[in-house]
Length: 286
Picture 1 (cartoon, rainbow, N blue to C red):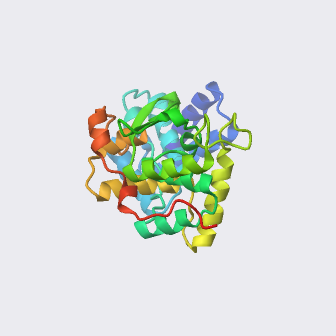
Picture 2 (picture 1 turned 45 degrees about the vertical axis):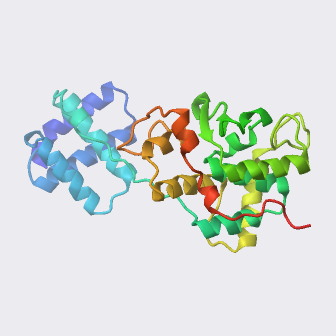
Picture 3 (picture 1 turned 135 degrees about the vertical axis):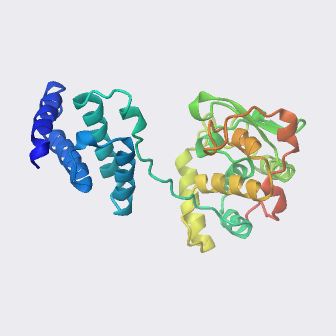
């Protein structure tokens, strides 16, 4: 387009000065040209509302999120550098790819899955992961001293981000762990590996999940994190305050509407684990 020529030259010079690669330059020029053609006007005559309308149009065409964000980069550069409107780029938002909904098992599936784990140790570890909403690394990293049967809490050390937190200890889980301890007699680590001075390898839990899922005949892909997702979902379905779940999971942000909130140990102790609603055999049949 004739009206693009001076702007194209200017924009190309700006990109060259900033050492943008030839491929990026072509991509940016193409995006701005497409923006101009959509409205039939020179892009320097289009404003922020036009940018937003163009973004909506691109989404409606089914454009990929990376391609949409490449267009955002081009328009930010065009307005901020070539046109010198420094206040506009920050007002052109990048697209956030929607997160896929996590796989969640219902209560019956949790029971089928856990009872399909043949090993006492891995069954106890995976049951603990579900009962307390633990990550795989957190479950294998538990020590015997982390289980506080008096205060009915579990201490999780060095969770994600190196943060410690306290989670509730389910009454049923405490009974399961006591049975497990009587039979397995772990010494330091709650779930020791072959070398008892080290915890069980996290890959053992991942492999156990794959085997148990197949043995239970579940069509869903089940991982240790699936147990954690199920824990959170079941608590939400049972009416637990999202701020409590946020702390139990150790999340800085559980959702776009929740902020990290400190919850007292008293509230944590009074929060019932979803495991307590299940009837589960902890010891595999001989």
